Image (cartoon, rainbow, N blue to C red; front, side, top):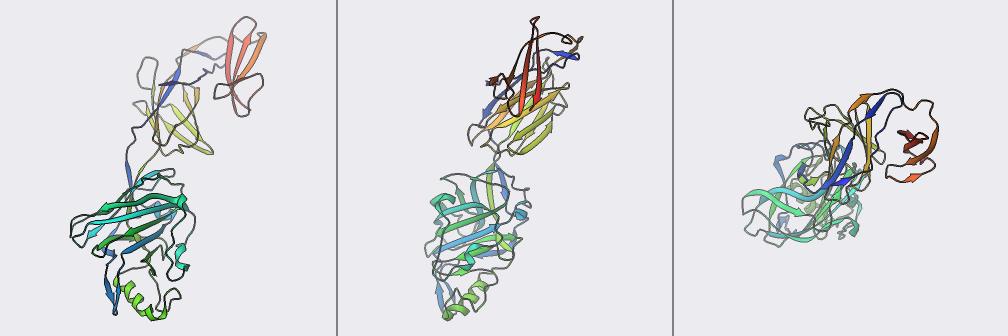
Length: 385
């Protein structure tokens, strides 16, 4: 448990405070949450890698099957379990479908990035290219995965991000899954509605295929154009659909408890948390509790809790990506007094910022001002410069 440098603010001529405190500690007891990409998956529409698919006499062995999809910010606000919150820490990706063969094993690597683009970028790449994003966006190495038993539905992909988590920034998300599948591996997976007409492109070792792909396509050699048009039809790739993936994530939260000096719950405390340019508010409930979810863990948090018309402030940090913050606040008890400071001679004035540093001149931003009088008394107040 960490004690934070807290000042009681005494309004001249109004009230004096009994001891008040704000204590906080980081905790790793986070709750796993999940987001299912956009609305509701269409159980009757499936995409398949169909390894060894024969189309117009051409045998397409899609034993390297790459999925690239762009989920827009609008899509991400319409998840089946609710929106994916900004600053979510995503640690795993799942993709539901069915295993169509006895072999259950393949390997996958994954790249995930924040983007404000509105078009899948790999549509304009030429025949025989199969690019991957830069290594900065890689979240999972070529990882072995085991699909369900043949004929069974479930997660055909359950991929922990073993390199690093992905931190969602509130815009669109670009996901690339590169699957290394032996010839005997066949599977399908669910798709779901999407805002964009072409939010996904699928590739084997050489050829991109996607909804709306014409039989005269500059990316495909003329001799194969009809075959690939048939391939798109055979795989049932429709516009405005993308893979119905699921993301497992954490949020970084401040969880608080406010009590009166006698230990009873304090209802109605106003809590304001400022993180960078973002401000979040909450009010303690009948049990004295409050929660502020989905904060940017990389930045310090300034918390201000107002009780009995008085405020305590602190600056706190999540310290690392695995933490939430628990806060315990004891409200001041107000006792009416006379204006004890009116007309008294001042001996000294010093200023403290929210980190507890002292100066003889005000800091920029929030200051706690400690005024000492000639008679030995002290007044503490808060000002913003």
